[in-house]
Length: 94
Image (cartoon, rainbow, N blue to C red):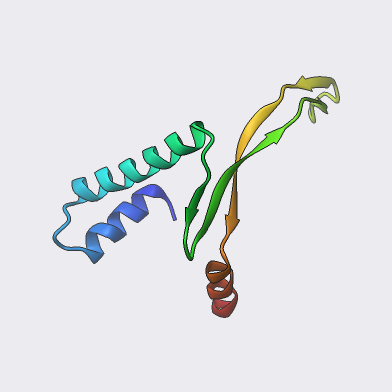
């Protein structure tokens, strides 16, 4: 599901929400989540999962096209871990 599909579904499910309002709500939620991760906070949504930051140390990588060695700097990357309820619901649906 893409962001625009989510906005359309919200507007369909809640007729009192205009598409513009659904768009604003989704944008505000995603901005709040991004801000929390930037501050180094962990995000937990009960029944869904959690988002945290993982540190990746610097390493020597390889350019797949040329085979040349390249230096990859350290970085922080977002990591999602599905909650128990989400895992069970997905498993039942399959």
